[in-house]
Length: 223
Image (cartoon, rainbow, N blue to C red; front, side, top):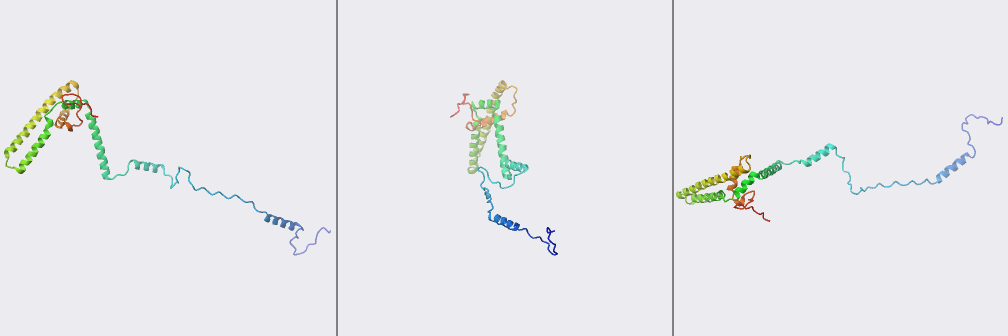
């Protein structure tokens, strides 16, 4: 019966086992005395950007935004003045391109060579008219009573126009024969006007420049 201790009222806690408290306290003190293992410090993040790449400043544009930006570069917003200037330049380029295409046609080349190889009265018409108009103006301003001189100038102008018509008719007859021989099925529409314009223009101002000398010899291009 000596195995059990008598129960006392009010005693609820059991006595600690001898040696257990000392042992636990010794372990705790040993744990406190042992230093904690040092943890590696986190590496600082590199702030420098890779070479050849720039920092991103905003969100990536969508496909629609990129397409709108590309169209804005191709078709910039121009003012009305700039639009008119662009259209005028485009029309001038088209006109020059069409004129160059027309000048390369064989019948026009033949007419130019035919006119340029001959001395014509028509190439002196413009200088004659300019001289007559200048003299006429001087007479009207300073000698208004010289009616005889005015009438003589009018007669000279009339004879010049008659000579121009005869010269054009003579040249057109020769050109028609050449056209019938070389290009019988080709339309002659507008060729008389082209010949007349070529005849009236002084030789040094003709465009395209004459390719033949007077008399029919082909010109050698200048270096």
